[in-house]
Length: 272
Image (tube, rainbow, N blue to C red; front, side, top):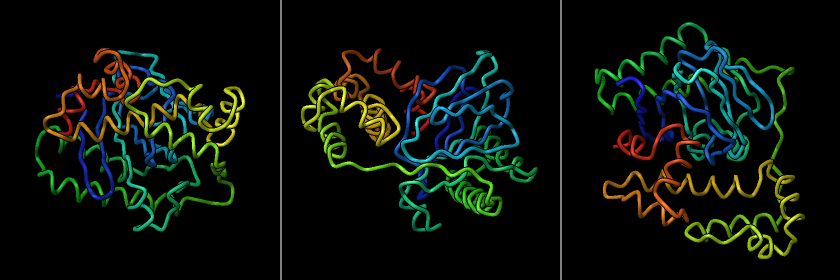
C-alpha cells in the first residue's frame, strides 16, 4: 500500500498522505497549504515564490493561497512521504481568526518529537485501517489546530514578512473571465483583450499583482475544478479532460500528475 496517496476530508478542508517520486512543476492552490515531511526527504528541495528551501524532517512548511511553489526530487527511487493539509480559508478565518488572503506570516514551524510522532501515527492508521475515518477526521483537525497554535507560539519579531497580494480591477476582470472559460481553449491574447490590455502589459501587470503568470493561475482554476469533480462517483476522466480544455485524457493526466504528484486515477481512488 505504500506509494499510494490517501485523502481525508473534513470541515477544515482535506489532508493527504502522499509518496512523491516525481518533480512538481511551478503551481499554486487557492487553499492555504501546510507540508509536513515524514520520511525520505534528504536532498529534496522546493521553491516558494522563487525562494529555495531544503526540506527538513523536523520542520513543517506553510504556503499561502496562490503562492507559486514547485518540488524537486533528485533521487526518483526514494519516494519521500508527506502529510499535506489543504485548508478551507473560511475554517481558518472562523476558528483561528486568520486572513483568507494571507493567513500565514511565517514559512516554517519547528516540529518537536511529539508533533513528529503524531504525524507518523496518521500514516500508520490510514495504511493499516486501524482507525475509523470519522475518528481520523477528528484527529487530523485537532493536529492541525495544534500546528497553528504552535506556529503562533514560535513566531517572533525576526520572522520574515510574507508579502500581501495586490489588487487591480483589470486583473480581477481577467481572473473572472478565466473562471468562466475553463472549458474553452481561448488564448491569453483573448484574456488580455477582455481586460483592456495589450498582451505584454497584461502579462507584466498580472505577475506584479499576483506573483504568478496568467497561465499558472488558469491552471490553478483547472486543478481546483478537477479536484472537486473527482469527488463524484460517476465522473469520467475523459469527459472531465474535455471540459477543462484538454485535447486528450493523456494530456490531462500528465498535467494533473505534474501538479498534484499522483495520477487522476490514483487521486480518485484515494478520495473514494
